[in-house]
Length: 341
Image (cartoon, rainbow, N blue to C red; front, side, top):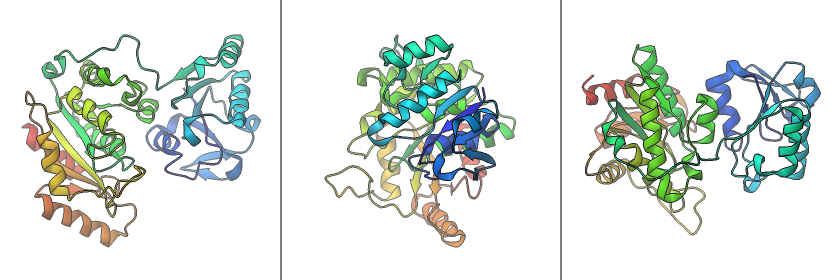
């Protein structure tokens, strides 16, 4: 697969361009070009940015990936026209938004005529059901990333821990639970698009598949936060459905309030309280414990970031690191020690 990432107006935005940035960082070798007329002629992580579709096509992409979160999760008219042009050029289209392209009669007919495939990453499998208990029989160590808020790097932490484990020769698998992780890994289920009763069943299916893919150590990508007023339901369903043995608590240094919740304030409790909360919320049949803290220190300079790591260790008594900035080694060491490896 060779991606053309569609990122009009957002290729420089790490929040609204989250899918683009994730794929560039962890699957960059499969990206031919980025399309964003506001940054034409520039590069991002070594990938050229074009303003015109025709210019980008010269680099040979076969799939157009929607790399942004549009306003309200829907496609404005200009995007629909761009998607049509991509299909007419023979590109498949991969889409991670809640609006499914394959449900659009015009796009569906156009894709059929040009031999293009419309892949809606958030469309859940049709045969999902409730969890069966198979999650408790998976012969692998299951590690879930949990967080103090949304959009703080749980996917990134899971990917970095998986990369570090595989560098050590461990049979390790990243288990994707959201659209960006799916675009990176090429499989998975976006659990936030699953009927509430079936979220745990979806999570169970994912850890079973992760084992079938050869994982002795499974890193389950976390979603939302147990303390988020909007998204906690997805978080708890994923937690109980994946039935982790161990947890890695993720937090963005300097963030002291839940973002985007409305009706606040919604303060974030101290890390030690979050450790206790997550351990208390584990399944009685599979008690899980937090074994490390992963910090996102992007807002801090190096000295302040190192102090934040030390403070997290003092407060929780657990190993801590920013795995992107300082490496994932201490976190993987903690997981391996706790799992008896």
